[in-house]
Image 1 (tube, rainbow, N blue to C red):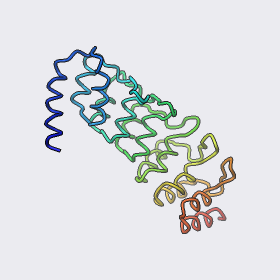
Image 2 (tube, rainbow, N blue to C red):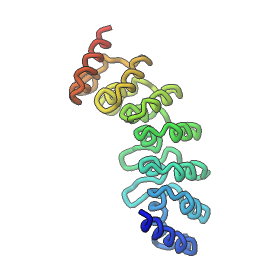
Image 3 (cartoon, rainbow, N blue to C red):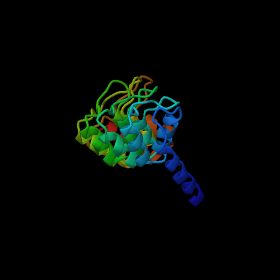
Image 4 (cartoon, helix red, strand yellow):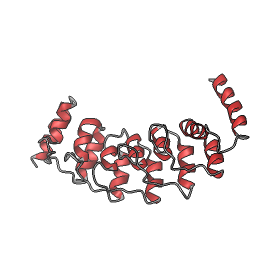
Length: 213
């Protein structure tokens, strides 16, 4: 690990004397995003690198910062006036959706403060938050006005996603806020079915009880 950081320190020294127009600038930039190297990101942004440029795999830098767990880079990008807060990738995912999935409550709050779209057509940040290990992200989005019954392109709700992929705390929170345990998606599946598909029998039983109230 020490050798790795030493080699990277040498790399940074070389980078600071290169031109932003160098063919490898994009590679340098996205490597810095992945490593949470805000110094290099700020250096390149100050010299004109587009914060909305896409990586070789079509991901924007703000989305990647949350996906890779790079909070310092995320803060640098959020502070840049030209960063598009709702820039999407090929799967129509936004930075807020990834911040929600990863459970980055502070990052999600900053995105919302910058005007990130909370309710949108198709999959929403709340669907992603329901799958997060951190129920607090669900609470944040609901407090900011997320539509609790928003449905995905196939009619799936956040409660269904939480029932299969999220912690029980997220399920309880959604139920307490009024999410329907009776809703069905286009395949005829409801929260109880989603829990059963995940082998969560006790949770399925609680959801079934909630559906009959």
